Amino acid sequence: MSIAAALGESVSGDSAPPPRRTAQRAHLVLLGPGLIYLVLFFVVPVGALLATSLYVPVPGGDVGEYQPALHWQNYTDAIAQFWPAILRSFWFAFLATVASLVIGYPLAYAIAVRARGRKLLQGLLLVLVVAPFFTSFILRTIAWKQILADDALVVTLLHWLHLLPADERLTATPFAVVSGLTYNFLPFMVLPIFAALERLDSRLLEAGADLYASPTTTFRTVTWPLSMPGVVAGTLLVFIPAAGDYVNASLLGNNTNTAMVGQVIDARFFKVLDYPTAASLSVVLMVAILLLVGAYIRRSGTEDLL
Amino acid sequence: MTAVLDRVEATTAAPPARRPRRRLGDLIVPVFAALAFVYLMVPVAYTVMFSFNDAGKTNLVWRGFTLDNWRNPCGAPQVCEAFANSLQVGVVSTLVATALGTLVAIALVRFRFRGRALTNLLIFLPMSTPEVVLGAALLAQFLTLRVPLGFGTVVAAHVLFCISFVVVTVKARVSSLDPALEEAAADLYASPWQAFWRVTFPLLIPGIAAAALLAFSLSFDDFIVTNFTSGSYTTFPKFVYVSATRGIPPQANVISSFMFVLALAIVVLVQVLGYARSKRLRAPRTTQ
Image (tube, rainbow over all chains, first blue to last red; front, side, top):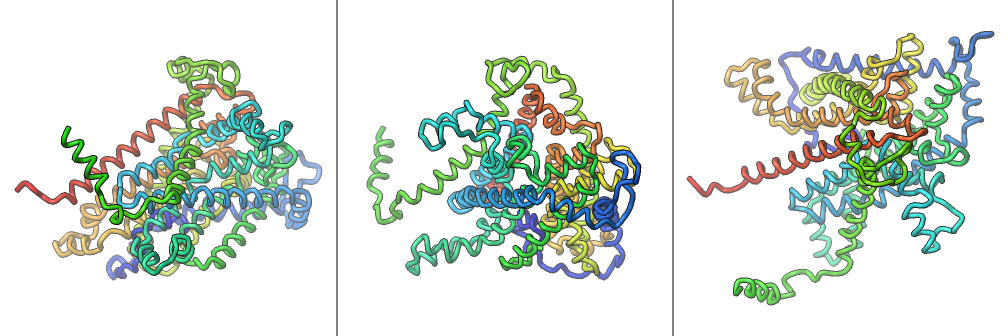
């Protein structure tokens, strides 16, 4: 089972199918085109990325001309120069993941447990959860910019309530970036948690109550542990895209304390034509995410997600 | 009148011990969920609202209601061109990714073979790689091979990130099918080929359709990978992002709102029809 499988495979259970004796080679025909595609357009490009990350400028060449080399110093240089953006990306992604868990879990719980048995209502509520995806991602982020703008309702209200000092703003702050990330990836948190809670047998909850457990204890000892696969899948589905995102940081952030690594990679590629640095930062981001994801899955005891 | 009174009486007379007492705490989750839905919908409402804005140069401040933008959705330069490009990229990538992904999904569920774990890993990795890395890797590859960037490279990139999602979605459907159906077809002297096209494939269509819709929506709304692989070719999200610095024309909101309403209508219709059908199938037959 893969991460996203938790979204769709709630019912299937992945039972071992009977082995086929006839058509021994049929699977090669079926797999061939797709796997060749993934090798050509994923494995080979990642190889190209690794190679590019070690390139050096052509001596005496133009800007943007590089030649193959094994210049490992590209990595140390890139990290030395851009470590704040790398760390900030992971920090913002972490905050957005926690925020969307806090908002998304009760939402998924309401749909899966409170609306249980009312199939049409559940279906329509799930449509509402994914409905933001039907509008443009960039326009939604621009809408956030408008919502958090200095003269808009939210800031005026916060000023009036003295929750936000009069000389402070929300737009172009780390808060704006994290709230944009949270907003944009929240449905990815809700769907897998819904799938996990949907499978939860309500008799287990009744049993908890019969055994004199308070609702809180039942939640802590029954509901939460059983929804763990959904929580793990959801946190990964939010954390991974959030860590690499740069749309929110560039539309909602500022130039000093909100720069994320995706922005740096984009700028190195397109503004400075510094391909080796951009490539080494991409490799650092990819490796760091794979290590974090691996450790997280191991720690949370849900290896079967992979 | 009496019926109404009866009903009132019936509800008030219901023994309180039968129903668990409604506690204030029970309301926390629904109220919280309602607030979360408001949170999810407010930016969408903004997007739709600003499609009716009588915007001047920038569509960031409300200047008054107008239908002009809807009457003339192609009024701003390049909007409709970008939209048409996105539709093209979306359709082609969806067709290719759905075909390739469906075949892989069938093989993964129906066959045991060496290298299955490796195949699963190959499917999983693109999904767990941030888009910016996918984009950077493809761009590094295209630069190395000196491939000109444009429609072709964008489609190649979109197919890549759609395949994994197609595989996962279709796999769920394949593994929920009863293998006995195919065996029955074989017992009735159908060749494996006939059994697949007459029995398995029709049953897979809902899963394949869901996968195709997912692939299309991923492709249509993609910005990051597109930005890396498109060169001067413009898709709708790229158009919106690029115009953000000097002001997005309200026509972009019109197109986005139109797509929103269209997609919402389709999905709600599918939900309601599916519900009606399952209800009809479950209903006991009262007439002969």
